Image 1 (cartoon, rainbow, N blue to C red):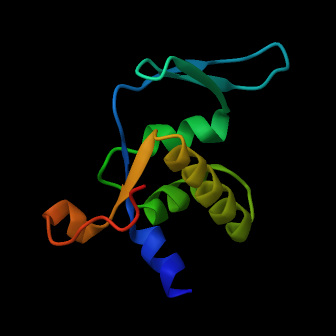
Image 2: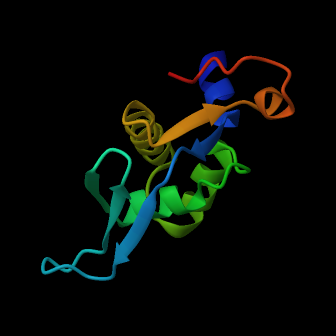
Length: 116
């Protein structure tokens, strides 16, 4: 459980050259966005919540702040939104789109234990 608290205090940061384009409404009526990763030659489609999460990743806000912000927008149970955000963040980390920093990493005190 202490590890979960530590992860929630982590600060996600975008890596590399990432372009994000919001598509207001698709044929199915959903709001989606695309992430373009020019360095990898890849394009990813994400839903509205994924777009909100990526837009909130500014290198200053912790994961807990991002989760709290989303709670104010969406009517989703607390446990579910936390699980969904952490799962999405993990996918972004695995794809090399973001990295997680701790407060001390940003001050240069420690090596980042969350970077892959």
